Amino acid sequence: MKRAHLKNAVRICFLIGIVYAWVGTGYLTWIYRLLNHYSEQTVGMFTNVIDYAFQAVGMLLLAIFVKKRASNLKNIFTLSIACEMVFMTAAVLIPVPSLSVISGLMMDVFCGMLFGCCFTCLASLPDMRGITMGMGWAIGSVASYLISIPRDGDFLRSGYSLFLYLIFAVMAFLLYREPVGKDVAEKQAPTHNPPDTRILVIALFTVILIEIARNMGFLFPISEFAEGTVKMEYSRAYYAVGLILAGIITDRSRPGGLLLCVCSLLCPFISLFLAHYSVAGEILWALNYALTGLLTVYGVILFSDLSENALYLAGFGLICRRIGEPIGASLGTAFSSSPVVLITFTSIAFVAAVFCSAALTKSLYLTTSGYSPKKDETNKDTALENIPQKNQAGDLDNEEEKYAAFASKYSFSSRELEVFREVLKGSTNSKIAENLFITENTVKFHMKNLLKKTGTANRTELNELFHSN
Image (cartoon, rainbow, N blue to C red; front, top):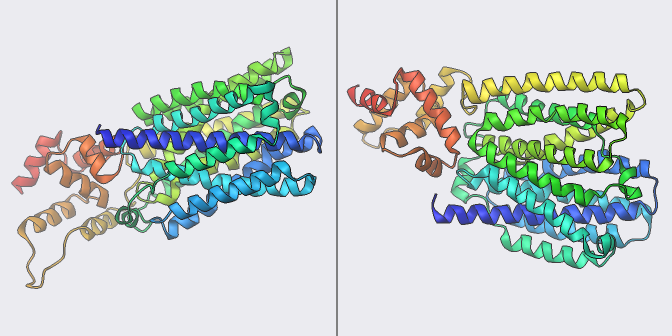
């Protein structure tokens, strides 16, 4: 990998880490303030349901902005930083409980926008998306823990923590860069060969159902946090382990990352079982946070891959999680008094998540790349859109005519044609990924389709077939 790409990955990693440390610890300071005015049940509703819903709203607003104007994210990121800091300060310092709640919810909206901006930056990485996301989120988790150490957490509870949060905000501003240039942003507009709708729907339901099943089994009870029997900041340190592991595995194998997410769904059942044996809450929090890291990384990277041709999808992984979390938490709370009913509904969500995961694996990783339109006729048309048309003299260049005929004969999609051109140039997978702003895994998916459509066994035969026509 070129040094420039590595530097870009490191910058994005620290950007994600700083933003997560900033908004994450600011959120905890706000929760401490709410506990001075409201019951644990009320604050629990904020942390498990309302808070996530408002973050999802923020990310959806950003997606709308990106869909309309993907080439100018710097301004929206700067605005989000300023508004996040203003509302965070108000939520912590305003003594009126109702106004503190309103400020905190607005803080959540801009928190979602900040996360969405960070995830769009992953589009500029041809690879290393998983480890960049995992390490960045892990840095934020560990930082949350370190900030809680001074004065046994009193610093985090005090208004003085706002000075540290301001420093984080400035650092985030300095680290942010536009994820893609204007020309690439136009290329990645949703009108340019977007992901298959069926695959997109399956991906949405997969992440949402996994999150519902996970949250139904373990609700992160705020009472343990309020009583001091569990330190949320300390538990977040375990989160880093799952995040880094998920980043490494997801980069090596997307299906492997998804399989880990499905396996992590055993955690709710473990939590429900151990809860009856008075196991220390700290252990359950640590276990759940560690396994949550798997879904955090895979969910973001799944939609980061799908956003290669539709940048506005970059934040949908976290949006799905923010939708699934409150649904799962609400159902878990509603059925908490009836363990049999809770286990039954958790099992139903588990089975549904497994089926969706299997469908996603088959549709996205085994049979198609997920970026081609459904019908061959459409593939043919979109492929030909990238072939230069007749010149003023009415003649086509012989080479381009040959490309057009070959693409039409084998029903290449637009993206497959782009990969095919790179193959004929002798480009390696990593070079193709770099030139087309996609991952090496995606290149492999397209190569598999090209070889299958042409009936060739390797690149050499594919090259020979083209030149023999």
